[in-house]
View 1 (cartoon, rainbow, N blue to C red):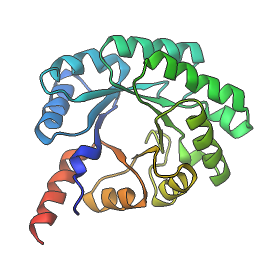
View 2: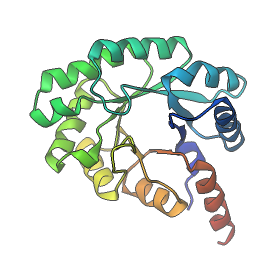
View 3: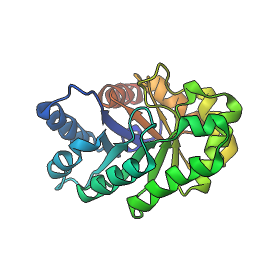
Length: 223
């Protein structure tokens, strides 16, 4: 594996029972391995930002997580607060119902208002692909781009499904090479991470980042 896996990983901790020592460990690991970012629920952004202020590592905040069914106004407010707390990236859950029902204007406005509140910071739109048909995935990808998002993201990992090579390939084929695709959910080892990157992902969300990069380094030493 020749790519630098650590630089593509959002080191993730989204468990509702996670406590301050867990976030301290998350940030220590992120600094040690030079991950792309840590990804946490928005309530923990200020704490993680303070821990990472000397490391220049990004903190990504989830918004509308994990269902996406909160109001657009609440997503906008949550995003604005996360930005004030130091978030450098936003991972928002889309209006899955609007996507499935074909309500383009509602779907796009929900994202566009979050993009506006992010004030130039990249917004990753979680489509929750396990709930969608392939046509809905294609539709969501195009609409997310039209709304100003920087990435589409496969999954929350909370609703019974995760990233698949099929979905990443489908999204990459629809969006071309110049758009962000984050694969997340169920990525537990270096081989799975490598397959998803080869399928077209340019960011990975996982809570197993340390195990993945450690395994990848060991494999590289075998060449």
